[in-house]
Image (cartoon, rainbow, N blue to C red):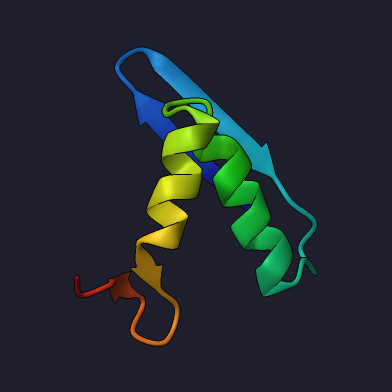
Length: 59
């Protein structure tokens, strides 16, 4: 499995084992997203999301 982010001429790829758990895929996605956004912004975004609805939390 590969998670790919393309930004202009840059391509970031995170390769995961075909038998990765959903948790490992999420962690891989977080790692890859920090190539584009700072770790602080990724953590802030994580805290603003609701895993029950897979959407942004209501304020």
